[in-house]
Figure 1: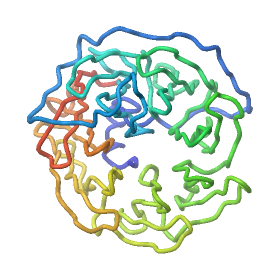
Figure 2 (figure 1 turned 180 degrees about the vertical axis):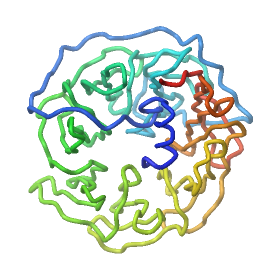
Figure 3 (figure 1 turned 60 degrees about the horizontal axis):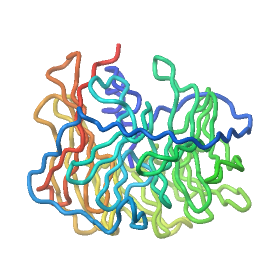
Figure 4 (figure 1 turned 120 degrees about the vertical axis):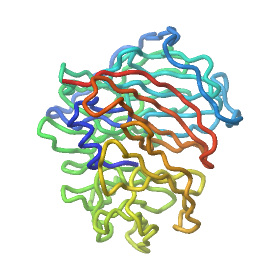
Length: 395
């Protein structure tokens, strides 16, 4: 989970891409409740990425291999983010507007770097989910400055076949998507940046509004969790649509998730320390006494990045730390500060692998920068590059 912090604001101010692999900007126009269900098309792209680098491995690695494209029943890790991992396959997006030497789109590759393939071409793809043999994702159409003018919810087979348009919404943007059962939950924004929570069935029918004026964060069985306009944690009952505040704290966008009856969040009210509280509002617990951001739950552990108190672009990176779900057993994993000017931040933790997006440039004010997606194991000793490419500064 992540919030838009000072380093993120600085990133936008120097004209980098609107998403940078992890999220889309929150913008666009008012709903009319209509649904566009478009016909199923083949939509496959078999073009292999010849420009992407070979994977670099500093030590021998292993990954769960119980699932292949022919057997999609294995657990998928990372649903909702810019990277999904299942068995021996990694799916990821290239979404930066200024990419110079790589096609925008949705890619797949083997964990050893082989069979790298562009399976769907397009800009501003995010919120990937792998469910029942389908890759679901959000794709926005934008004008030249990156402002979204329409958004589509789509799905495609992991090999790039059977592209299916589920829902088309003109003049909207969606900042995140989650799938639970037969429903796709969407956090949406209108042209005045007013949020709403909506859902549509996985076949693209039955679009409905759950709540207006709240920012979507998570769904857990018959409850939706959101943020109010004052960044309070709100619980919404799906049956009656009643809303109720959960706990006394506030939290900014993204640093918020639910698991096994708990809400985990970075507490804006307490200098961004990590907290948890039960979904009924009881048993509030402080887990860390240090400012954190970009935290993820994985196999009974929480991995997070330490918040920087200074935002010098030449040193920004931050240490990665691991704790148990109750806050015990704090363990430093590694420091991902870059040697060059730039920064690196955590975007996913999947089955013991920590995925990071890194930006580096030769010097302040440089016209180009290097974008890199890589992963390290939970010991910090094994690093693998997923993809790297050059970009030009906007402006």
